[in-house]
Length: 280
Image (cartoon, rainbow, N blue to C red):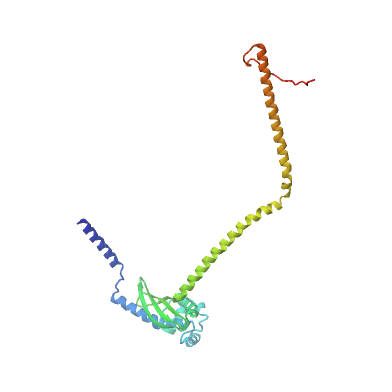
């Protein structure tokens, strides 16, 4: 019974954790803001950014309007202050946007133009609420590839544009080519290191030859040193033989003297010196 209750409690905890990890249900007001944010991103912000970077449908007319009304062109928009950029956008499109965020969005759309091709067609959008922001993901199809525009708006009734970016959607071929390039770089680095190690090992056979070439004097004096060592060893050996023969002679003389005196041992005799005489 206890095991059954324990198993039931574990299942209930797992189901409770699963329920907590589910998506939060939006209120009616939040859902209304999300729908409005998606509509504004698809119909106003993304077309506006495509026009500002110069490959939208009305890019030429917008450039003319900016030069005529504000004495500024798209190329010099980055030189304007934040207030001037916001005034330009509000005057042309009747909407609010953060000046710095707008400049970053223009740069992102310009960078992605070559990869996806323009103008890109809007396919649809989804949005999520993240605290004080509403993040809208707009799917787009360019002449070269698909892309996703991420539009960040303020989570209020004004839905002010804070930032935006346009990123190409990587296909399977793009992922495979990138993986292949990483594999080639990794394997190439390994082979280069192995080649360097083999070259270093092969140099071990050359180093002794180089040392022998730069040390001829040591090779010439080696036989002389060997001969000197042999002579020294011979002299030491001869001296040791002479000393051993003297000790034997001392022992014989001491034994003879002890015998002549009638002693049984040589303990009382001390041989001070031995003088050799020539035999006539």
